[in-house]
Image 1 (cartoon, rainbow, N blue to C red):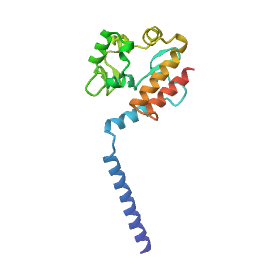
Image 2: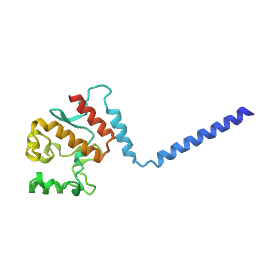
Image 3: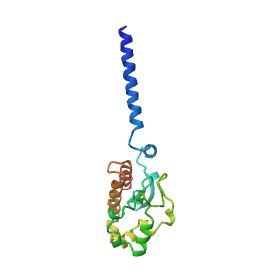
Image 4: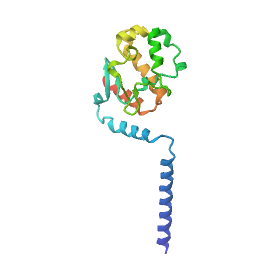
Length: 177
């Protein structure tokens, strides 16, 4: 009789735990696509020190990391008041025309986190020492630190400082040293 009561209590506790878990999943604040992206990023992160599979493009000791796209969050415009100081009038018109209703670039594929016009993207979307010198007056010596700083700021603003995207970016940069 005592064992039966313990079994019933245990069964009820287990059922309650399962119910709470189901509720937590059902009312979780992130959409299902977020969970898929997190799982995909976690599964694609190398377990060794070879992060080359995560690099979209490398320039010296800086790299554009796959599955990020933080730089493609172009708006809101009031968050970038200095655009006119480093974009020409023509580039500024082009930049503004690329901002979608959700402040993401209209050429950014949010599902695959890739630029749909990567090979034909505007010059202001490209990261290279000459363009950084022209736009921001950053010398080659400071190029890596400047790019890393900009990426960290944008990734933190878009995904958060403790995001998988930030961790991946930091791991990739560390592997380049």
